[in-house]
Amino acid sequence: MYEQIVSIDRMETAVSLFGSFDENIKLIEKEFSVSILNRGSDLKIGGDVENVSAAVRAIGGLLTLINKGEPLNSQNVSYIISLVKDGNDDKISEFAGDCICITTKGKAVKPKTLGQKKYIESIKNNTIVFGIGPAGTGKTYLAVAMAVNAFRAKEVNRIILTRPAVEAGEKLGFLPGDLQQKVDPYLRPLYDALFDMLGAESFQRYQEKGCIEVAPLAYMRGRTLDESFIILDEAQNTTPEQMKMFLTRLGFGSKIVVTGDITQIDLPDGKRSGLVDAVKILKNVDDISTVRFSEKDVVRHKLVMDIIKAYEKNEEVRKRK
Image 1 (tube, rainbow, N blue to C red):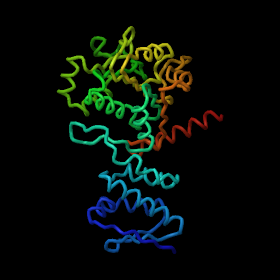
Image 2 (cartoon, helix red, strand yellow; image 1 turned 135 degrees about the vertical axis):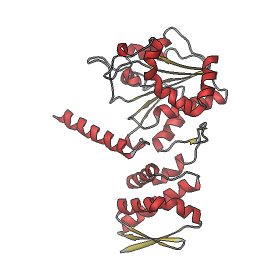
Image 3 (spheres, one colour; image 1 turned 90 degrees about the horizontal axis):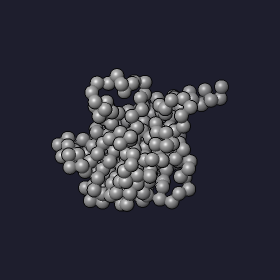
Image 4 (cartoon, rainbow, N blue to C red; image 1 turned 90 degrees about the vertical axis):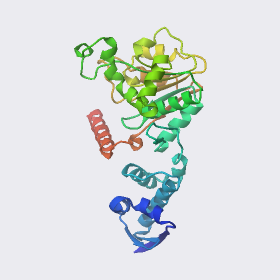
């Protein structure tokens, strides 16, 4: 059996590395089939040469996160392990530590995966960005964080959030209230993200001043949006005509972020998705970027990643049949 020693200088670092009831170390032992023993300030890793080497790299990656002030949890520990298995552990320092903005609860909003880091960089460097990927990858939340950051820095005068009011099994007509009250449930994820970043009172004050607007996509027609940060959420449910209408609202000094999951299109059968069309049509246009997330970028509960994988596998089997 091959053994290797990893030295840890500070007790606080060791406590963070091990996690509650040594859960992080146990996960590394399980994933790489190694044994890890604590000897004072040293960790002794034993097993096959390749497995020990991989476990050491995983521990090194976790120490990088700790040294950059990142608290360890099951999500980022599993993500570091996946990077090591894919041979991408040298990229861990690329996404660790970058803060986009601070929530009202004092929580730092940061990219947690390489895909999220690429997404943030694309938003910084391009006027229009398409963020495409499964649920839980932070597409909407990070876009709102970037919008709030730009608004606070006075890079834009307004934040405009919109999404198409397309039913996913329910009917708008059955919901109580006037039109705005009927579409509010569709806009709730956007409200939630803004409340998190700004607080309910600040959000309401900015909304009353016209600095923040949350509205269904139909309200965008006929407008030119200057000096605004505009986010179109659930864009897989737009038609090609709606998408063209939306993208041509772009005014001077504005940014547009379009997010969606092309595996969850709720349009009637036979209707093409405006998001799918737009990505194909605009793929070679300068200052427009497309970022595709995978299940590895999911930052929700581990089961979300497993559910996405299972559905993707089922879809592949269905297509083959």
